[in-house]
View 1 (cartoon, rainbow, N blue to C red):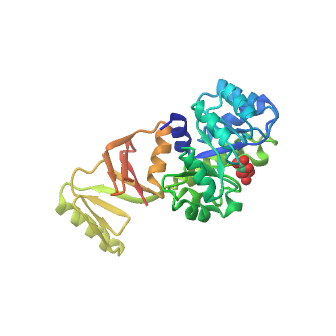
View 2 (cartoon, helix red, strand yellow):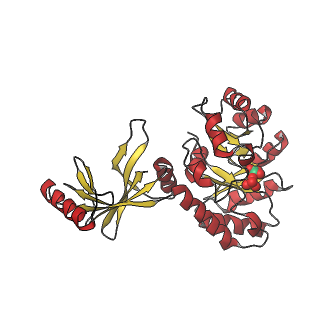
View 3 (tube, rainbow, N blue to C red):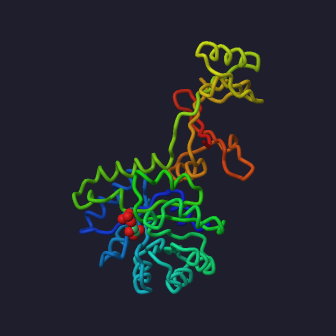
Length: 321
Ligand code: 3PG
């Protein structure tokens, strides 16, 4: 896959920049987004001088994936690419703009809201589209319905997204990224940079959706594991838990490893609604995993994986909820 698309999908959140008043604001905004764990900017041609800000971000903020939004004409697309835009987004599907970007080898994510437009995008060889305006067009339920016949298409919804509804979008694995202005809002004109960072961080937390799944105790053998699990079950009045080849649970909160348990002191498991998404994001942020611990579901999606590092003597793993 194209490296820019890969990065957009890994970050999973696309701030849409509709208004900037100075290069200083642009720089502060870029830094605020990056500090919040969202190093991405769709700089829209709703601003007369969008290309100036695109150039600035490309020159001064190399960690940020920066592209152009609201690209309505070939002229704007050309200006955006001259300024170094790494991708092009448009509210609608204009085949001329799509073909122009394809000729330039630059990822283009045009907007769609109907099956006919999705088919047009497919005919143009596209794999990803923006779903716009998302909430006003029926939100995540509309995307689920509309995407059912088009198994290979990924969607970037924008329009009306916010902290209260993004979890539902992220829970659907055909969503490549959630876009919008909600993490910027009025904070930009008030120059409340830390508020923007907080909103980005909250968005990432919602996307990752980590919740404690269980703690793991390392026992030397199956007999010891059974006795630890039953001790806890009796002590806490738990239901007996799953008894598998490698471990036995006390209820659902404690997993006792029968052999070769990872972690000096044991392990901690966190569940997430979309493990593939969480791992993609964390890898993009430089986090390492123990690939030898990865287990996959029959459909190829990731079920479980351990982080490379131990924390406080505990191995830590993520598990698909
Ligand atoms: C866009 O251009 O993608 C949307 O206008 C962003 O919509 P929002 O302001 O509702 O997030």
